Image (cartoon, rainbow, N blue to C red; front, side):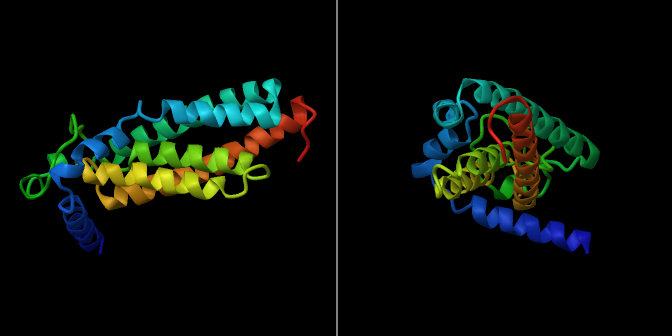
Length: 191
């Protein structure tokens, strides 16, 4: 059963990865770059500051740092635990795919880009939902786009992406709850 799932995952990866073309490669390399969205994160922090104030923003910054550290460390533990080679390093897959990433990396299950971006999307989307009702949908779309970029550039299978997104959503929700608790304890914000 597991072999069949992994085979289907490989087939879906090859299909999605080979949809790419050199016309779009630069765009997807920009999307997959971790530094690309720093201004976007700055805007989210600014919105949190405007809606919650400076004291709350300091709590959010600490919670976000803990959340990203948590998702990164758990992702790395899974990668080292499962040791599933990335498609760009897998025999029988490398020669059938498009690889445009800067580097391949060793193990890919599950995607850190997917888990981190989804954690940020859920965390910020839930905190800002009372003020910007539909922002969470934009953030979920953004996170999914970042996640798909990992398939496009050739470094993750779809299962890596789906598991990363699921883990990121759970993490974002947990850290949202933690931040709400801290806000009610240390600020005048009550939930």
